[in-house]
View 1 (spheres, one colour):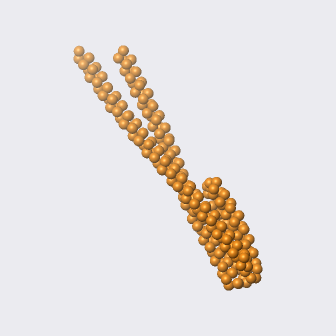
View 2 (cartoon, helix red, strand yellow):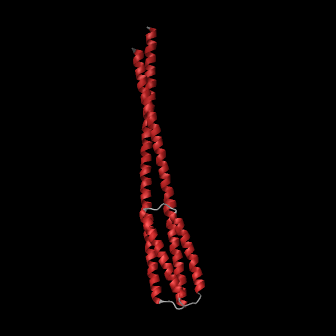
View 3 (cartoon, rainbow, N blue to C red):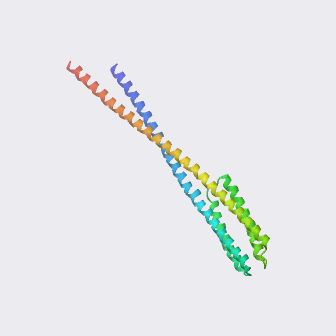
Length: 220
Protein backbone atom coordinates (compact mmCIF):
# COMPACT_ATOMS: atom_id res chain seq x y z
CA UNK A 1 0.00 0.00 0.00
CA UNK A 2 2.83 2.37 0.94
CA UNK A 3 4.67 1.46 -2.26
CA UNK A 4 1.58 2.22 -4.35
CA UNK A 5 1.11 5.56 -2.56
CA UNK A 6 4.78 6.42 -3.11
CA UNK A 7 4.55 5.62 -6.82
CA UNK A 8 1.40 7.73 -7.11
CA UNK A 9 3.08 10.70 -5.43
CA UNK A 10 6.15 10.37 -7.63
CA UNK A 11 3.98 10.18 -10.72
CA UNK A 12 2.22 13.42 -9.73
CA UNK A 13 5.53 15.14 -9.14
CA UNK A 14 6.92 13.83 -12.44
CA UNK A 15 3.83 15.07 -14.28
CA UNK A 16 4.08 18.46 -12.62
CA UNK A 17 7.76 18.75 -13.51
CA UNK A 18 6.98 17.78 -17.09
CA UNK A 19 4.33 20.50 -17.29
CA UNK A 20 6.78 23.03 -15.88
CA UNK A 21 9.40 21.94 -18.41
CA UNK A 22 6.88 22.28 -21.27
CA UNK A 23 5.87 25.75 -20.04
CA UNK A 24 9.52 26.78 -19.79
CA UNK A 25 10.21 25.64 -23.36
CA UNK A 26 7.10 27.44 -24.63
CA UNK A 27 8.00 30.65 -22.80
CA UNK A 28 11.53 30.44 -24.18
CA UNK A 29 10.12 30.06 -27.70
CA UNK A 30 7.80 33.06 -27.22
CA UNK A 31 10.62 35.11 -25.74
CA UNK A 32 12.92 34.37 -28.70
CA UNK A 33 10.10 35.27 -31.08
CA UNK A 34 9.50 38.51 -29.19
CA UNK A 35 13.20 39.42 -29.26
CA UNK A 36 13.35 38.70 -33.00
CA UNK A 37 10.32 40.92 -33.61
CA UNK A 38 11.85 43.65 -31.48
CA UNK A 39 15.09 43.46 -33.45
CA UNK A 40 13.15 43.63 -36.74
CA UNK A 41 11.30 46.70 -35.47
CA UNK A 42 14.57 48.49 -34.65
CA UNK A 43 16.11 47.50 -38.00
CA UNK A 44 13.01 48.76 -39.81
CA UNK A 45 13.12 51.97 -37.79
CA UNK A 46 16.63 52.60 -39.14
CA UNK A 47 16.42 51.19 -42.69
CA UNK A 48 12.82 52.12 -43.55
CA UNK A 49 12.37 55.34 -41.55
CA UNK A 50 15.57 57.10 -40.49
CA UNK A 51 17.56 56.58 -43.71
CA UNK A 52 14.62 57.44 -46.04
CA UNK A 53 13.90 60.57 -43.99
CA UNK A 54 17.51 61.63 -44.61
CA UNK A 55 17.06 60.84 -48.31
CA UNK A 56 13.97 63.05 -48.47
CA UNK A 57 15.96 65.90 -46.97
CA UNK A 58 18.62 65.28 -49.63
CA UNK A 59 15.94 65.53 -52.36
CA UNK A 60 14.86 68.92 -51.01
CA UNK A 61 18.51 70.05 -51.10
CA UNK A 62 18.85 68.94 -54.73
CA UNK A 63 15.63 70.78 -55.62
CA UNK A 64 16.97 73.90 -53.94
CA UNK A 65 20.15 73.60 -56.03
CA UNK A 66 18.05 73.35 -59.20
CA UNK A 67 16.02 76.36 -58.12
CA UNK A 68 19.23 78.29 -57.56
CA UNK A 69 20.50 77.40 -61.06
CA UNK A 70 17.24 78.52 -62.65
CA UNK A 71 17.14 81.76 -60.67
CA UNK A 72 20.61 82.62 -61.88
CA UNK A 73 19.58 81.76 -65.41
CA UNK A 74 16.48 83.92 -65.06
CA UNK A 75 18.18 86.82 -63.25
CA UNK A 76 21.21 87.08 -65.51
CA UNK A 77 19.25 86.23 -68.65
CA UNK A 78 22.14 84.05 -69.78
CA UNK A 79 22.05 82.34 -73.12
CA UNK A 80 23.99 79.28 -71.96
CA UNK A 81 21.00 76.99 -72.30
CA UNK A 82 23.06 73.85 -72.77
CA UNK A 83 25.10 74.47 -69.61
CA UNK A 84 21.97 75.14 -67.55
CA UNK A 85 20.24 72.06 -68.99
CA UNK A 86 23.31 69.95 -68.17
CA UNK A 87 23.37 71.12 -64.55
CA UNK A 88 19.64 70.43 -64.19
CA UNK A 89 20.06 66.98 -65.77
CA UNK A 90 22.74 66.07 -63.23
CA UNK A 91 20.47 67.07 -60.36
CA UNK A 92 17.53 65.17 -61.90
CA UNK A 93 19.67 62.04 -62.11
CA UNK A 94 20.61 62.36 -58.42
CA UNK A 95 16.97 62.87 -57.42
CA UNK A 96 15.88 59.86 -59.48
CA UNK A 97 18.57 57.71 -57.83
CA UNK A 98 17.44 58.74 -54.35
CA UNK A 99 13.78 58.01 -55.14
CA UNK A 100 14.64 54.58 -56.58
CA UNK A 101 16.50 53.80 -53.37
CA UNK A 102 13.49 55.08 -51.41
CA UNK A 103 11.16 52.75 -53.33
CA UNK A 104 13.19 49.74 -52.17
CA UNK A 105 12.23 50.37 -48.54
CA UNK A 106 9.02 49.23 -46.86
CA UNK A 107 6.25 51.66 -47.84
CA UNK A 108 2.84 52.02 -46.22
CA UNK A 109 -0.18 52.93 -48.36
CA UNK A 110 0.07 56.68 -47.66
CA UNK A 111 3.74 56.67 -48.60
CA UNK A 112 3.03 54.93 -51.91
CA UNK A 113 0.36 57.51 -52.77
CA UNK A 114 2.49 60.51 -51.76
CA UNK A 115 5.52 59.11 -53.58
CA UNK A 116 3.54 58.59 -56.78
CA UNK A 117 2.23 62.16 -56.57
CA UNK A 118 5.78 63.40 -55.96
CA UNK A 119 7.10 61.61 -59.05
CA UNK A 120 4.30 63.04 -61.19
CA UNK A 121 4.97 66.56 -59.89
CA UNK A 122 8.69 66.18 -60.54
CA UNK A 123 8.01 65.22 -64.18
CA UNK A 124 5.73 68.24 -64.62
CA UNK A 125 8.35 70.40 -62.90
CA UNK A 126 11.04 69.23 -65.33
CA UNK A 127 8.83 70.15 -68.27
CA UNK A 128 8.44 73.68 -66.89
CA UNK A 129 12.20 73.91 -66.42
CA UNK A 130 12.82 72.92 -70.04
CA UNK A 131 10.22 75.40 -71.18
CA UNK A 132 11.88 78.16 -69.16
CA UNK A 133 15.43 77.61 -70.41
CA UNK A 134 14.44 76.91 -74.02
CA UNK A 135 13.40 80.50 -74.66
CA UNK A 136 15.96 83.21 -75.32
CA UNK A 137 14.18 85.48 -72.87
CA UNK A 138 12.86 84.05 -69.59
CA UNK A 139 9.08 84.05 -69.33
CA UNK A 140 7.78 85.59 -66.08
CA UNK A 141 4.59 83.51 -66.17
CA UNK A 142 6.56 80.27 -66.62
CA UNK A 143 8.88 81.21 -63.77
CA UNK A 144 5.88 81.85 -61.49
CA UNK A 145 4.43 78.46 -62.45
CA UNK A 146 7.80 76.93 -61.64
CA UNK A 147 7.78 78.47 -58.17
CA UNK A 148 4.27 77.16 -57.53
CA UNK A 149 5.35 73.71 -58.76
CA UNK A 150 8.34 73.86 -56.43
CA UNK A 151 6.06 74.62 -53.46
CA UNK A 152 3.81 71.68 -54.40
CA UNK A 153 6.80 69.32 -54.48
CA UNK A 154 7.94 70.54 -51.07
CA UNK A 155 4.43 69.88 -49.70
CA UNK A 156 4.66 66.27 -50.92
CA UNK A 157 8.09 65.89 -49.34
CA UNK A 158 6.64 67.26 -46.10
CA UNK A 159 3.78 64.72 -46.23
CA UNK A 160 6.25 61.89 -46.77
CA UNK A 161 8.35 63.11 -43.83
CA UNK A 162 5.25 63.24 -41.60
CA UNK A 163 4.42 59.68 -42.61
CA UNK A 164 7.94 58.63 -41.65
CA UNK A 165 7.43 60.14 -38.20
CA UNK A 166 4.01 58.53 -37.72
CA UNK A 167 5.17 55.05 -38.76
CA UNK A 168 8.32 55.50 -36.67
CA UNK A 169 6.15 56.19 -33.60
CA UNK A 170 4.15 53.03 -34.31
CA UNK A 171 7.36 51.00 -34.48
CA UNK A 172 8.49 52.45 -31.15
CA UNK A 173 5.14 51.52 -29.58
CA UNK A 174 5.47 48.02 -31.00
CA UNK A 175 8.97 47.70 -29.52
CA UNK A 176 7.74 48.91 -26.14
CA UNK A 177 4.92 46.35 -26.23
CA UNK A 178 7.35 43.57 -27.13
CA UNK A 179 9.68 44.65 -24.32
CA UNK A 180 6.79 44.57 -21.83
CA UNK A 181 5.94 41.06 -23.05
CA UNK A 182 9.55 39.97 -22.54
CA UNK A 183 9.41 41.23 -18.94
CA UNK A 184 6.27 39.14 -18.36
CA UNK A 185 7.98 36.06 -19.81
CA UNK A 186 10.97 36.63 -17.52
CA UNK A 187 8.67 36.97 -14.50
CA UNK A 188 6.92 33.69 -15.37
CA UNK A 189 10.28 31.94 -15.78
CA UNK A 190 11.34 33.27 -12.39
CA UNK A 191 8.10 31.97 -10.83
CA UNK A 192 8.61 28.55 -12.43
CA UNK A 193 12.16 28.45 -11.09
CA UNK A 194 10.80 29.09 -7.59
CA UNK A 195 8.21 26.31 -8.03
CA UNK A 196 10.92 23.89 -9.15
CA UNK A 197 13.04 24.87 -6.16
CA UNK A 198 10.12 24.32 -3.77
CA UNK A 199 9.45 20.91 -5.35
CA UNK A 200 13.07 19.87 -5.00
CA UNK A 201 13.11 20.89 -1.32
CA UNK A 202 9.81 19.06 -0.76
CA UNK A 203 11.11 15.89 -2.42
CA UNK A 204 14.30 16.00 -0.33
CA UNK A 205 12.30 16.62 2.85
CA UNK A 206 9.85 13.82 2.05
CA UNK A 207 12.74 11.44 1.33
CA UNK A 208 14.38 12.26 4.67
CA UNK A 209 11.09 11.70 6.53
CA UNK A 210 10.60 8.34 4.83
CA UNK A 211 14.19 7.38 5.60
CA UNK A 212 13.76 8.25 9.30
CA UNK A 213 10.55 6.24 9.45
CA UNK A 214 12.25 3.32 7.72
CA UNK A 215 15.17 3.48 10.19
CA UNK A 216 12.78 3.49 13.14
CA UNK A 217 10.89 0.55 11.64
CA UNK A 218 14.14 -1.41 11.28
CA UNK A 219 15.11 -0.66 14.90
CA UNK A 220 11.79 -2.01 16.09
